Amino acid sequence: MDIIVRENYEEMSEYAAGVIGRFVRNKPYCVLGLATGSTPIGTYRRLIKMHREGLDFSKVVAFNLDEYIGVGINLDVPYEVDQSYARFMHEELFSHINVKKENIHIPDGLTKDPTGFCSWYEEEIKRAGGIDLQLVGIGGDGHWGFNEPGSSLASRTSIQALSPQTLSDNYESFYKKAGVERDKMPHFAITMGIGTILDSKNILMIASGVNKADVVAKCIEGPVTSQITSSAIQLYAGGVTVALDKAAASKLQNLQHYIHIERLKEEYGMG
Ligand code: GLP
Image 1 (spheres, rainbow, N blue to C red):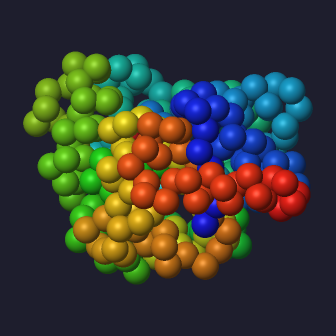
Image 2: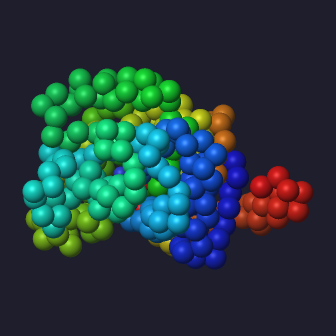
Image 3: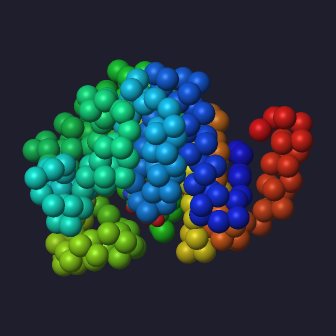
């Protein structure tokens, strides 16, 4: 696991965008797994800038991690009343880069058949050749996507009930601002499973802020447990990079060791 610590959110975002940008440049036909939340916004802004400077997304296939059930893309509805992840992705990234509409996949929160949709989504990922690079954030309760405490670490794309902590965190970050009443916020979501995420060939996890410090330490250094579903990162066999700002890294017991490894890799040109 490469653990990269940067001074602040901006530098962490710069690093993460650099990883994704290089990936797309080296493999234009790549399959990217993308994430929502406030953390990736800085990374997406930089990717948009890179696109304006020539980075081509026209051959990229994208799969998003998750979507609330009961909301979905409908561009006729103003953003303030549509808190779908589909709209978030459209506003924060897709409408600013040249990824083809037909190459974008986001779980359909408005589907009449969520279970059937989940199987179809898994098949679509396989048909695309699997995810080359999956970007993930980390929820306050340690989730990836919406894989809440107690979800199997082998889970596939499925319907999940949101935990009380996720409901509260995501209400504060997104729904409250939009004036949505607390009990009107969706309580269920479709999410790629932990098993689906672990099938990706590379994973890039990002986290920022002191509020994430405890959960980041549990994820990276705590026991592997379905109570912190992102702790499955410790079982992952592919290439994994964790980009953190100093605040999010502040509770890592072996922080000095990770910083030392990064320096050594730079020194020996292994970065
Ligand atoms: C949501 C998403 C996760 C994301 C998490 C953290 O719950 N389903 O994919 O990692 O929010 O969000 P933030 O980056 O706003 O802390």
